[in-house]
Length: 115
Length: 111
Image (cartoon, rainbow over all chains, first blue to last red; front, top):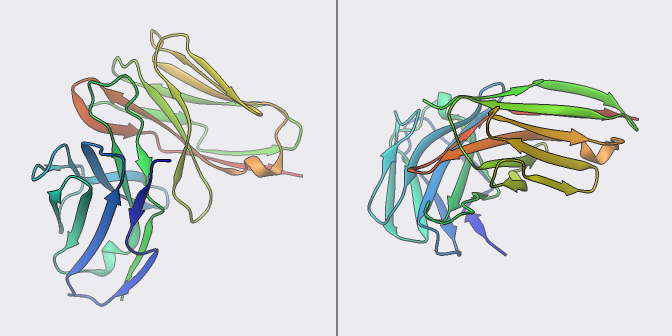
């Protein structure tokens, strides 16, 4: 079974803190993604990575950065957490696009509350 | 930019009834995915449709893809309460690593 594991299920942080959300996948997938999900707004892509040390901005990158030092791990960093970053964060991975089936697999999600 | 639209956004249906969720997308793509999300949980893959005319079925759910019409449908047959969830469709493009998600359809099956 493909497994995408996020480091925390629930997280509470204070405004101004630097926050790290970790995601690990065990399927040797090239692509990894970070989304946030808010009621009524669907899934919004924050950043994605198609290779080690490579990253691309998604739709809402402001206030976030990412790190991909190893193929299996993709970290989302909130440089200075703010209350408007309270959300559900979802990590996903998928294989390289040249394959026919490039289905994305999701982690269990991290519900972050910034107080 | 590829746009993916689902309708309806909200669906309340009685147990035993049939209904269809529609997913339209704006750019040619041969691959479409359906996901299910239970409240407070993550997304779980339901179907992967990889070519025009593809049809997949699992239990009371059947998904189909018409790439010429840029349309996928998720048909629910004789709904049961356990199908209550939010359903997302997603599309990707051959040279683009991203997935483009629809806004989701929140389904509630009433006893």
